[in-house]
Length: 473
Ligand SMILES: Cc1ncc(COP(=O)(O)O)c(C=O)c1O
Image (cartoon, rainbow, N blue to C red):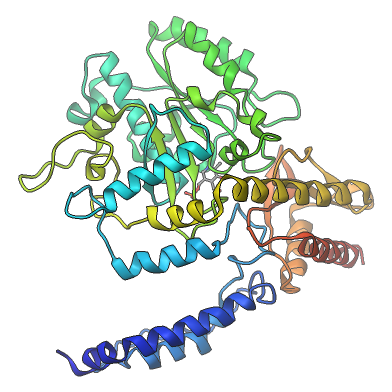
């Protein structure tokens, strides 16, 4: 064995102890770590040395030269995109995932695949989904959306007696997809699934909302029926839009199934967590009637990247799409034969951190986490609404706030929002994302980290106010 590798093998217990101690320091300091960095970074060494440095030296190099430039995205003051952290239990589970390094393809040589099925069952309980739903872990909501849409595509083929996974999409032609405010990953998924970005037909939203006008959807479906001779289609409903956290009326959409044939995919990447709380559950009534569902784990479940769940009822169709036949692999269609159910073949044991956190904190833990984040969003939303520097662009429905900056009573331009954001980021106190909402330059804050408390929001508010004052001068 190469001597540096041998030396590391001998020193592994000591190396792990040191990493554990460093990790502890990083985690303790998470609230003081800059939420985001300035964008000016040192050169990263790309010289592949002849003999290597050994792990201890590499670790020291990384921690001193580069780690200080990472963002505090795992901490309580990072409000950009929709970003969760990692609960203590999830972190421990994730470490052990690497230690055991299982390949969860569905092979029966270990308990890992059954573990994933069991974790999906726990999640079904958390989200009150019926037993007919099977599920699996994928790398994120984008991949989960892809699985849902590709399975919907296969269902449409089945109705037309065509196995699209075998014959290709050209065998049936276009598939139409209807959605009001789809996440950008829906377009990406349509491109990957061969249906194409142009397959998506935007449905009007309700006035001043991102939620679908279901009456307008019914009109579009009627027209589609007349034009296509009742060709089945796909509807992508949203449970939690990324700008204003708005929810389509899933029950009303489901009612349309009485008249039209469609596959209902619900992107509930983070909005699905409303099902953890009786207060917010009404926002996602009807989720249980979907054909496929996306819910992210690296958002509000607070497990480390990368992790999401896909849920569907159609195991056979799903395995027609994702089957990976080889003489040395299982071919049966069962909920734990993951190699035939997801885009990947070799797969990380993503279920383990999720299982750890679900077992450690239970339903109450997640109810509290969800309700606390929503209360904090309401608290900050109220402050923004009451202050003349800001304008709330949408009511706070859950954990997200969409607002803009006012300069002399006028909505700031995109350029001014950029300057405002630079001032905020320069403080190192918090991070938030710029956006456009109904063509207005805007900002969005999403609270999804288990560690965020009122003191962090108060600090964030102070910082926003200071940046707005500076912008005026
Ligand atoms: C509603 C929604 N769908 C899909 C995604 C894509 O998620 P991921 O980055 O996990 O692929 C996001 C990410 O924020 C989202 O908010």
